[in-house]
Length: 150
Image (cartoon, rainbow, N blue to C red):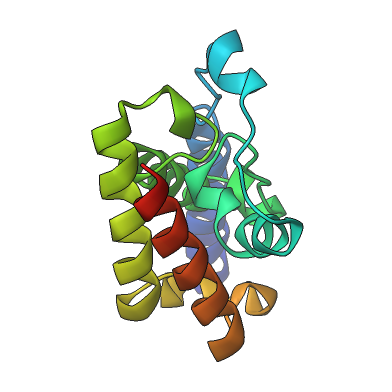
């Protein structure tokens, strides 16, 4: 048995599979109305900057896919994370939600920042997305203030 032939055949099969799976895409295309797109999030610039850096990749239609987010099978994982994040909270469509839902979202933002956001699996690669204690307090303060306004 010639091991070099077996390794070569195995490598060719793996390469073919990797090429074929690139055809299977996860749709992360924004499905957004003109009305939703015209209403930007009402927040101080510092809050917007933090949200864009740490939250928007999963919670808006302004996702920026890294190179590995375009290559299967990682594209499937990244795409599903983005779609799941948008289902929970989407800053791009936030003001199209009923006031009661907006209020619920502001309450969730405050809690999520303390408990789990941004996800460790995201910040492991995106180190700049890690929130400092000061940034967490600022986002919590902003969400409390917005909650009270509704």
